[in-house]
Image 1 (cartoon, rainbow, N blue to C red):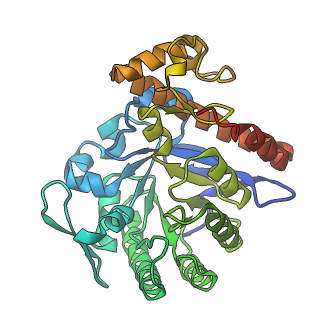
Image 2 (image 1 turned 180 degrees about the vertical axis):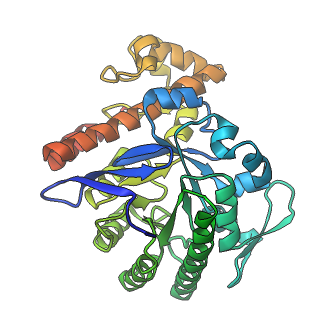
Amino acid sequence: MQGKGIFIPGKRDPNTRARTGQVILPHGRVPTPAFMPVGTNATVKAISVQDLEEIGFPIILANTYHLMLRPGEELIRDSGGLHGFTGWRRNFLTDSGGFQIFSLAPFRKLSDEGAQFRSHIDGSVRFLSPEKAVEIQTAFNSDIQMQLDVCTPWGTPENEVKRALWLTSNWAGRAKKRWLEERDEGYEGSLFGIIQGGFSHELRTQSAAEILSLDLPGVAVGGLSVGEPAEVYAEQLAFVGGLLPDDRPHYLMGIGTPDYILEAVENGIDLFDCVFPTRIARNGLLFTEKGPLSIKKAEFEKDFLPIDPECGCKVCAHYSRAYLHHLYKNQEILYSMLGTYHNLYFLHNFVRRVRNSIEAGTFEAFKHEFLSTYKQRLD
């Protein structure tokens, strides 16, 4: 068995592709849909693994590119993989480093063999092949690892998109071969392939056919939310969603706002991640039922309400907007910790409510009601 067996489908929404399910992984089951916080350097910024467990997250991300550079895969492997290194007892998904190589375009050189790039730390020349990406993530003992791929931003010429698609498909086959060898040696994590193809239906269809033919445990959609207009994102997502198989988990890379999450779930996406919720928290923007609240504004200086009166997190139970405003203005570390906890709690609870609405057959009504209120921005 290569590709099947890690996803148990649940309920289906009668009017959309929205669905629930469970992804079965070495460090526990992941109820879906699920948002995964991003821990680039093997830590989600400004929050402990104990607090992440308290909120209820069953899976978080770590970044292969950054961790291969520092502290290096050997140290992480010798400390018991990412779980032993960090103390996180639940699941890790690790990306392949492909997106970071994409973002370092001026410092990279792609070939059939892999990607050569310069370290952002010391400028040293490094090389990452699809096989090496699998080996590094195996050393991390990743519960889900991603193939090395080539991501193309909005506006990329078609010939470059085709080249990226060819490399991604070729690298996926090579990654699978190395992953199967690692499994023979006792590694239990799953490898996901990535559908690319830019914003062409024809190329997306071709990429999906090539990736799905490899019969991997899960499939990801890459190359969306990379600078395109929101309506283009929605249209492409709807198209690609129709290409995804029912018996595998579907992962959309790089989204983390309630409106984009709802769009993703409506099109059959099970897993999603983004740095957005934690990044905006540190920069003074906090989620509420009525939209993001900018705690840096002077109007909150004497506001003794919680961030969101409807939120059940411990930050809203114990701290006022006035106090958080004070912490932020004085650049206190505690602000980042509290703001991050709240934003992640809010998003985790939001996705739980999405799951409940699918189970109850009321997803469309939930989406409409939530967005009708959420768009009343407070900032």
